[in-house]
Length: 313
Length: 196
Image 1 (cartoon, each protein chain N blue to C red):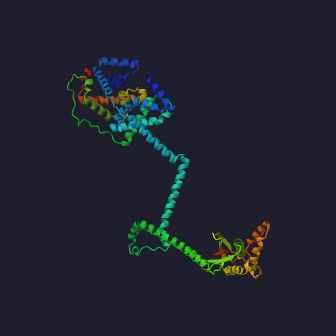
Image 2: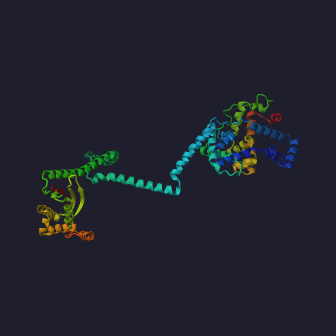
Image 3: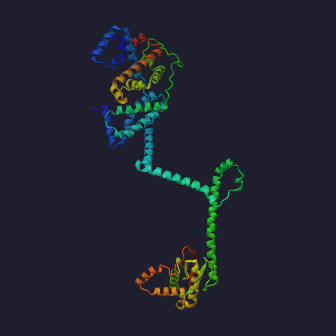
């Protein structure tokens, strides 16, 4: 073992990590080799100096800072768990939801671009004078404006749809006030008004009459003055006959309709008889009545109007 | 008599039993050691304190799963060493240690002075700290754990996941490099060291 080997073992020697024979051998060498002795002593001093370095202390609020970090990390963990755990369930669901949202957003985006064209909305004429590339840029800038204008356009359309209905109702009300107790021969979509001794009974008759003609009652409403308002639907070709039957019923009373020959008279008679049927018979009759006596032709247009039955005071 | 390790294990078991307050006893016991390792590994006190706090946050969250397969201190040093090494990998820049060109040559004013007295001088401490920080980090961590923190070779090997032979060789190379640096800075020749 030469001096180089001895110096290689110097750290182990100073840390007392050598076996007794190795330690004895080195100590024997050091007694005779001053150079190795000096090197080992210098190494001992170096180790001593390193070990004498001052400890480095933390700041005074170290522990509270650690607790703050723990709380922050706990909060992040809770949020992460809330968002993603159980991961096999939530993550696929969230991905699906994101895809759906993306699809919906793109759908709305493209629909908003197409809507003005479909509804006949025309862009301001100045946009036609813009060069194509500039038009694209201006289009991006105006997208917000277009969305606003589209919304305004839709609002206008809706209000126009509502206005005719309101006007129609207003005109019908005016007509009924002007001529109470008289049949008003109103145009299609208007109101037919009749006066009857028994409003409810007459309503049933009207219903039976409609069924026989291939029509039906869409809506039945009562009012404060005991009147009955029926919204009905009927094949267009039967409208005149139906109105005529109503007039005859008024003119002759409910029983007079029986005396009258013709389809409407028979129907009215049938409707009256139905009131006298037992429950079983009425059920059977109901099934039969569901089949119109005069079925409408295919593709025949239907007309809707209202029948107001006023009590005879 | 209860040793420090037994005391640590007792605290760990109490923590695992639900007594979180014992964490407040573990932190003061080890915080300066963790801080010393982090500071000497990172070379920046602010970063080191932040990292030391992170180490204890990891300890807090990992303590429930600590099975006592090693000493608590060994486990703590392993977390500290790994955090330091990972931090340096992320940062990817070595602390700029002056090689002496910018520092005045420090010589022993009195050849007969005891180096332990000189250690009180600020210059010597600075040189030593800088020399330690200039070491390759795999040598540096071993030197810190052995010569500053006083861990055994076995504890260092367990903390760093190294073989004992690797610990011995790294430690020896680190010491020799510090020795060379000290000798160069202070003109410590072997004759002076003999007197020390």
